[in-house]
Figure 1: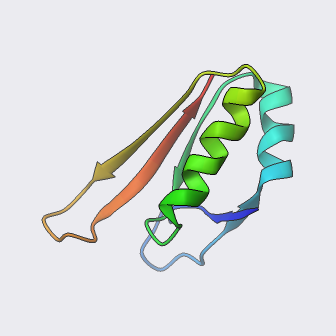
Figure 2: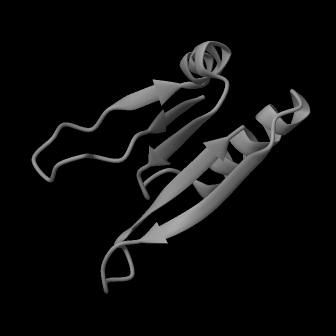
Length: 80
């Protein structure tokens, strides 16, 4: 599964991350907050949450709105 990360700058290129890369980061750091672009399918993010919950992690998924437009949001995933 490949997910799009949220951009840090308007002019920045879109970066992606694979599930395997997220697992490697979690093995090293133990907990991490990831910010994903709103273009990701909600069902993919729910699948990510379920994947890490099956591994015994606590996972929190929420939408973060940063503007007044309906499309001005991103997904925050906190994995513990």
